[in-house]
Every structure is written in structure tokens, then in C-alpha cells.
Image (cartoon, rainbow, N blue to C red; front, top):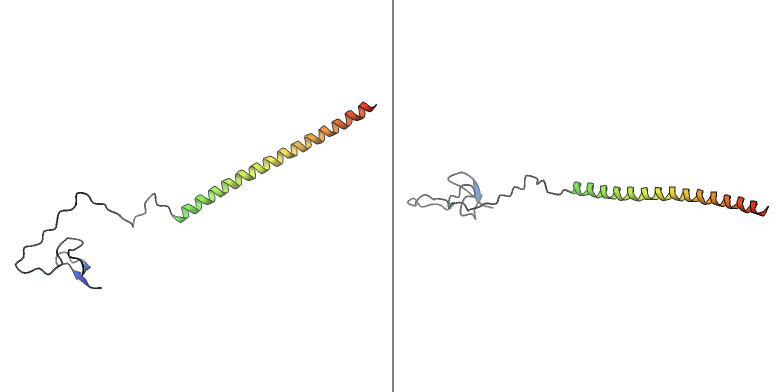
Length: 113
């Protein structure tokens, strides 16, 4: 691809550009009697996007992975905690019903006498 060097600042521009990207000087060969180029005034506002600097709101795949793992762990922990509580309760219930059955058997035996 062809390139054109700016006569004022020395920046190498694409040959299809009419003006220098840095100093806005004309890249067309100027006639000897032409007045010097005055760049147009800058716009009233200018949006600058710097993709080299990471945004604090940018979501990286690592952050997504960590978040997913935390959610999975929290769900697993809650389920296992509920299971342990159910097992403990069922053990208490079993002991209670066994004790109740023994007492009922003793009452039944005592009532027969």
C-alpha cells in the first residue's frame, strides 16, 4: 500500500488521505504560489476512545469464570447444608419414634398384667 509523508510534521499517512492525521496539513503537492494551509478548527467536542487502557467496567473471561464458580459453590454449599440438616433431623426423628415404640411396648406389657 502506498504512503505519503507529511511535509510539515513528517508523519507517514495513507496515500488516500487528503490531510495529515496529526497536523491536518494538506498532503497534496502544493503549487509554489499557494497560500499555506490553515487546518480547520477542531470540532466543538471530541470523543476520545483509548482501547489500550482497560476499563474498570470491562468484563474479562476470568472474572466471569470466578463469578460462575462462586455461584456454583454457594448453591452446592446450601444444598449440602440442607442435606446434612435433613439427615440430622431424620436421625432425631428415628430415635424419637424408637423411644416412643419402646415406651408403648412397655405400657402395653404393663397394662396386660
